[in-house]
Length: 312
Image 1 (cartoon, rainbow, N blue to C red):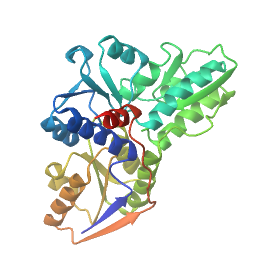
Image 2: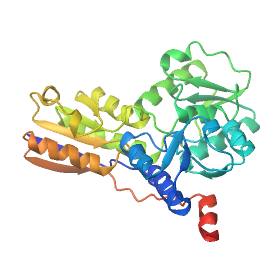
Image 3: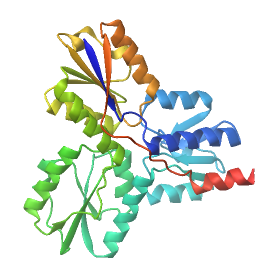
């Protein structure tokens, strides 16, 4: 039995930045440091930071007035920002710059008179933050079935924006359905699905057709990780989303000659290495790297954190 190891995989630039923000704020102020929502959707990462003194909460009422508060990589609505200001919290914004880009696009296209369809997962924290930029003014579309029930927008010009972590193929199907119903719908100037999501899906498209089984490492709450599993399954592989080596079962690997391995954008590499060690124990004799693209993206730290470090 052999394993195909997808590349790129694991942490993206936005996740790297968000984790570094929490670690640097802990170093500056000491614990506790409060974080609105899980900083990224990975239980391993969250528990590691919790042990160091980070406190994760969705309720700002849990945060003592005047405390340091970090916004997670997924972004927040203006209402959350206003609540933080009212509680006199020292905010450090770790929102991924690619999510911030979409928030800015919402206001740009509304100013230009567009009606906006937002393609995303209902209830996902990134979706909630984006919809909160203009409550009641964006039309949420979760799947193709939603398109038929959409009201006719009053605006002559229409455009769509998307959650950054969606399946590229699934999103393309929704866009086709929207354009069939609303021929005047325009594409955004640049795609909203992030480079890391696209790269990881491109890599899974290479290894899945060659694999009997694909193991996608990450969290059940991670949208981009769930999309990777869906893409692998759509290409004919038996695909499983696992949290780590301990989740692998005999049934998953039954009859497999080739096992594909990848990880979502919020999964640390140590989880991947743990899975590879378990696969070797279970009979994998050879591991082949299959890298479809190199990544060298990095995001600068938030301005608020840089100023605090300079003042310390």
